[in-house]
Image (cartoon, rainbow over all chains, first blue to last red; front, side):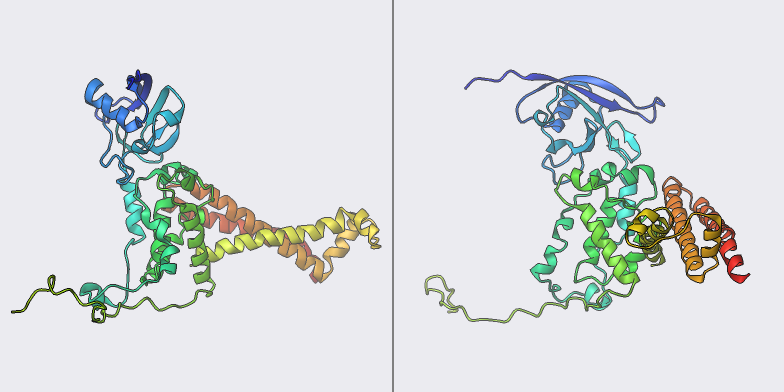
Length: 276
Length: 120
């Protein structure tokens, strides 16, 4: 087996230290890259071998946790989900996610994202408080209904959709694609009765109607979700509610307890525990 | 839910403008096309013709409706653009009130002539 000689890749990384007082600037590092190496691998190499003061977030390294969102060659990506090879460039410019304040170097402040996420009450809201506080069983949900919002339940809250959104860039108060998509995800859930609590949050000057349907969020989402679609479906729900066209549907009920059945084939004697 | 209703009114106003402006354009500026269909309007852009149309209830209503839809569509759209770059809720409230005031004043000013001609 022949060993492939590593290719040299230049990482131009945004450095910013709020305690230093200087504005964000780019610093260059040369990293030996090999086939299959991700941008996150390069950053870890820099931190371990070249500059231990470099700050960036990382955790799972497999596009599940959503920690390592950053602007790579002017496009928001997860660093762990982006191979250096696929960027087709020997020079990478890496900055923190736009549309969010910078904490340090590549660490963006995701507080506005989570604040907006909390505003839309991203949890099941029901009127039967007794069942919610002391649940007796799960709520039923047919697969067809689950399919109407399942993809939006895969959101990892990485903030990439918000950083790609042109409306979030110009409107600081805009709720953003992440929160609006999550609003739809719960409003479309048949187990939920919280639409009337969420609609006033998104029916504002900086809510669902501010979305211009640029579609940048859907293009950038590393999990392949379509937040732009969720916002359009949310707009449809809002319009139905505003013009009295919404069908009143009772929320799904608690699942009935499983009925006891006799096994079709009796257990063999040698596996069945003897009561003697 | 009134912002949803306002937004739909904004969309409806856009369609209404296309229809009403279409009627205006065909009647006044595309008289050659009307002539093709056998409708011969004599000097539709002349002063007397305009005064004559404005004195008729149907035409006056059409122009007043067009004025209302254009003002609403334009001011609501412009307000949206300005609100997008405004971060203060108080400033937004002021902008909204100014736009409502400007819209009402412009509507009164623009609809004065047809209303005066109708009542004369």
